[in-house]
Length: 383
Ligand code: PLP
Picture 1 (cartoon, helix red, strand yellow):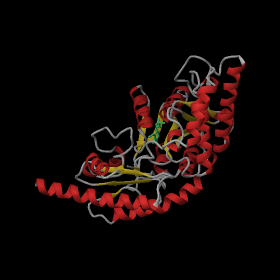
Picture 2 (picture 1 turned 120 degrees about the vertical axis):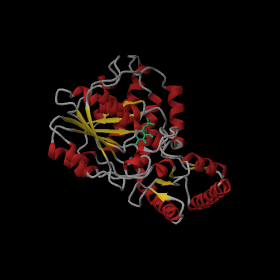
Picture 3 (picture 1 turned 180 degrees about the vertical axis):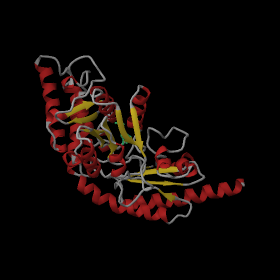
Picture 4 (picture 1 turned 90 degrees about the vertical axis):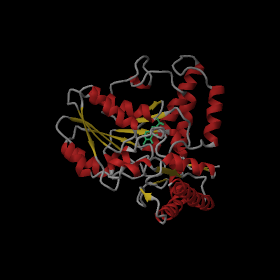
């Protein structure tokens, strides 16, 4: 089987697996304990915070460890909304966001906040002017993702950040950086972002850990209360092995970014051209998108059916983001960019990683052609 679902979960680096095992065996003490073993575990977390901070060009005390980007996104959005409700109760986000952002905003709306969901243009890219136009004096937060997890489009964060601050300097900017880190440059200062979420398991780190950058001067209302872990921002005994291994993945993926991009772009472009040449398929990804995501629709065919056919042919792909792939509904992301329901039901996402070669892509192309021909034949037979 060839695995083409890196955007859902990437296989951990060997070093990450070794780190998790070693730390679980040797450093099981509670980092809050005052004995020497506890202090050693705490020292490991401090070091991991420094490593992540260096990779993201922020200060160590601005790094907060969570259980995953879902939690990071929930904490950024609800934590900021609750903390700053005295300033106003309006939030701006986009129709492209991952469910962990989208549903956090919808939940706040149920609780009385006003939320503006800005639509992308037909390209799947949000116009910074549309974000700026949505900002009001009572807008406390804007949340926009770096790279869309379904179709791979890259959002113009610098222009969005500039637009936000030009309209309302006090409006906070949160970036869901999950699909961007390790593939594109991360420039929090240039984007003027106060909050930034990251998921180590998308960059060959461990699952069940997450990072939230909270820039100095920004406070969040804690969602998990208890002990004073993570500077009082998130109670709960720290996942020491996960945190240290996450820092390793953040560092390694940051260092290898340029090499990975050089490897993936020709593979991604080759796939884009192959799909564009197949009359049955409609491309939803672009050459100026992230280097690891190729998304297309087979209008009239359910994405799951094509994905299953490809699996029979040895190719593991996904229908959209892993979090939504069990939904039978059309993709919200594709509908928001003006695709019809048929196309929005028939999506397939191929996501690439550093194991993939030109020869793998050739095999995938053959499988795609065979799968589409076979489904077309079956359809013809049923008519
Ligand atoms: N944000 C984006 C853009 C994602 O792609 C994902 C995962 O698919 C998440 C957030 C959630 O990350 P996690 O799996 O760490 O909760």
